[in-house]
Length: 325
Image 1 (cartoon, rainbow, N blue to C red):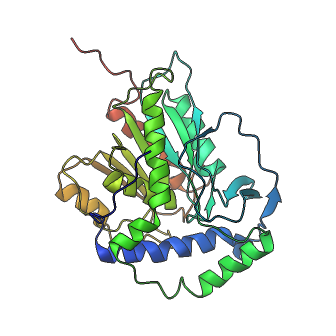
Image 2 (cartoon, rainbow, N blue to C red):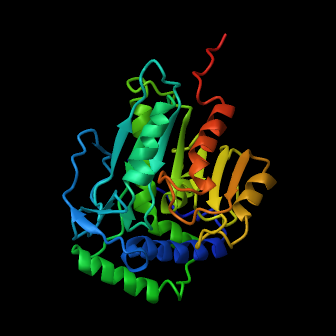
C-alpha cells in the first residue's frame, strides 16, 4: 500500500476543518456517554466472531497500547481501540447481483465504531438489493482500555475540549485522518482486486458513511487518491463547504433537522456540489436526531435507506450494467 501524500493539503476550507475537528470530538463524547443522558449503559462484551473479516494490510496503528474491545449499547454492538483494519464482505445472491458495490463506514467519532447499526445492518440491506457491501472496520484513536476509564475520558473531553474547539488547519486535520484514509484506500483496492470473484464492477464501487464515517467518506472522495468512489452517501455528517473536484461523484445526503451537531451549520456541502454542477440529492428530515442509522424509529428519518435505494436505482445501480455493443 503506497503512502498518502498530504503535502498538497485538503480540499476542505480551513474553517470547515476546524468545525469538523471540534464536532468530531463532541460526537465522540455524546456517542460514548449516552448512559448519562439515556440510561442505556455500555456493557463490555467478548469480541464477536468475524470469520469473513479480511485484514487490509495497512499495519497496526502506530504506538497503540490498548487492544481492540467491544461493548453493547441500545441492543447493538460497538468496537473501540481498533488497531488493525479489516473489511467484511456481505455479498448478494448471485442471481440478484447488480455488479454495484458499496464500502460501508460506520461512525463513532473515530473513537468507537457502530458496527451493527451503521455497519452490518446496512450491508445486509444493501446485499438484499443486489449490491455487494463491505463493512470497513477502520483504525481508531486510542481510548482507555477499561470501560470506566473510557467513560471518564469521554466525559472529560466533552466538558473540556469539545466546548473549546482546537484550532486546526486543513493539513493538520487531514494528517490526523491519515490512518483512516489509508484503510479506506486499501478497502477500495481489495474490492477491485477481487472484483471478478465477488461479481463486482470495478467502476461501480461507491462508499456510504455515517457521522465520523461520513467524514471519512468525504475525505476519501477528496483526498483518497486512487480510491475514487463512483458514488457516495453522507449520512448525518458535516455539511461544511468543500472545494469540489471536476469529477466529483454523485452524492446522496441525509440529515435530521434536529441533529444536535450538524443541523445548524448551513448547507455548504450541498451548495458546493451544486455550484460545481455535480449530481446531489439531499434529504432533510424534520426529526431523527443523530445516529439513527438502521434503528427503527417513528420519525421519517427511518426512511433514509429506502430513499437511498431509490437513488441508487435512479442511477442504474440496482440493475446489471448494460453490456457494450
